[in-house]
Amino acid sequence: MSPLKRFTENLLQALVSLGDHRLRTSLSILGITIGIAAVMAVSTVSKGGNYIVYSELATFGLNSIWIYRDYRNDSPHRRSRAGSGIDNRDLAAIQGQAVRLGVSRVSPIVRGADRRPTIRKGGKFASASVIGVDSDYLDIVNDRVASGRKFNSNDLETRKQVAVVGPEIAQKLFGTLNLAVRESDTTVVIGSHRFHVIGILAPKSRDFLASIGSEGGQNANDRILIPYSTMQKINGESSISHLQVEAAEFEKANATAKALQNLLVSRHSGNFAYSYETMATHIATTDRILGGVAIVGIVAASISLLVGGMGILNMMSTAVLERTREIGIRKAVGASESDIQHQFLLEAVLISVIGGLLGLLIGVLASYLLARITGFPLIPSLVTISGALLVSIVVGILAGFLPARRAAKLHPVEALRSV
Amino acid sequence: MSVPVLKGIDLVIGQGEFVAIMGQSGSGKSTLMNVIGCLDDFDEGEYRFAGADVRRLSLRQLSDLRSRKIGFVFQSFNLVNQISALRNVELPLIYAGRNRQMRKRVANAMLEMMGLGDRATHLPSQLSGGQQQRVAIARALVNRPALIVADEPTGSLDSETGDSIMHQLAKVNRTGTTILLVTHEQTVADHAHRIIRISDGVVLDDFSRHSEQKPAGRNP
Image (tube, rainbow over all chains, first blue to last red):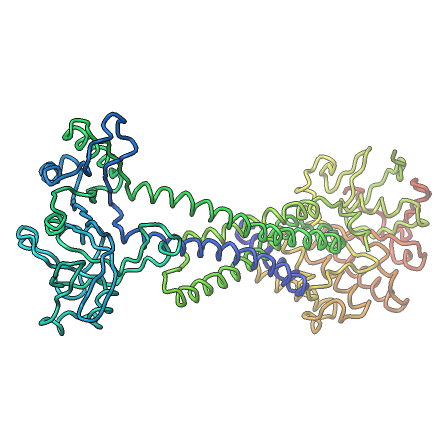
């Protein structure tokens, strides 16, 4: 008989035996179902967590590099040097050799003396963080102007007092997110300067990062962006607080940052020390943390799978004891050791695969439900699904092997003698 | 420490014989039957089945031999309780690797022959003792074995049913199948043509009841 036919026959025998012990079989199946569903749930939830964190990190630009003067690492003999260590000539130099440095975009960030000035519009007030940026800035941090326009080169060159505001500010001051209806009356006072609002940013979610209180996680929707040249005019100096750079390649972001650091050090003859941060590094850190959390979760869920496997082991051991006589009969009428072993192994694998499929079903349904509620695409991947199936087959084989082996090795005469 | 059950048994059973082995319980008759049926192994001596040295056979060859050449009938019927009469009769065919259509046909024909054509789908628990034993005989015969080993086949049946079972076996024997009957009842043994009495693991006597049924050729 071909192996496939033999398999089919043994499968049928196994199905009959399982059907004969429905309660016991369903309980064992339930054990695996819970185990697989738990593993699925943990992996899906952790993937959902990853998605949330990544989508928020992406609001800073995945290829972003921040480079700034590092006051701590300055030589103590040069403590007296004032200034940020970055100026417009540095910016021009970087723009001039962008390709060599691996830079695709660069924007200066210029802060005012008052980081969160009061914004006034008629009788309405608001408070917002105001920064001076280049026109590339919006592209670097994946920001979009929902209404109106962004800065153009004319705004930057002529140091126009124009502003792009976050949606919360727009809501507070104008009562609308649509700039067009208020074209005639878009002047606001920031600190003591009059600005013309030319654009409103699309809303941006950083709820998760904001909730853990990181500085970068501050509300992304109450920012005000103005041309950096305008901010420098107000500040009365041409220094740049820090540079935000977009690396051409994510993988080379750290090398690019290093090159920028060296460039700035040499341009300032070693008078200043500089530090940088890259999103690539933050993502690596995040991956480590989330990966660790996911592993802990999956280990915990795997324990329930292990318990499920123990259930099968228990059931199959009992079955072999109870069915000793049946095994004797089968051997007497010609079943070989491998026939018996296959039959019992198949029973164990059937239980775990059925349990695995049910667990998958529950896991997938739960994921869809969760996805609907949270709005995140928490759909289990094909890898997760096939992984879960594979794991349940392995659990079945492991749990069924010893009992099946014992059944196969039973001596026919002794087996027939049992009651 | 093992105690020898069989001591110096020297037997030749020819094809087509109807042999009864008789003895008290503990005489070793069941062990002898299990050895002859290739169910049990033995420590010393030689056993040839249809020319093959049984001790030299692998486990798989032994199970193959059991499925193709030997049929068993037990005192307690030994049907698999969870499956129908038909599936029980099919078991030896499954393990002998026969295909499905052939199995169904042959198993059904066998049940028909045993007068159980209408009971094919019944579970053993839905059949009477006599019917169960006839299912067991059908199962034992289904691979057209050379040898049927029957261990107290009437032991769990009333005398009338037991008689009809013995007649079935006699009928089977007339088609050329060797039958080895193990019993302690003289009336049952009387159906056989040759009676071997054993006691304490040795053959007490061995005689053929009908001269015309002398062991043909003494050639296994």
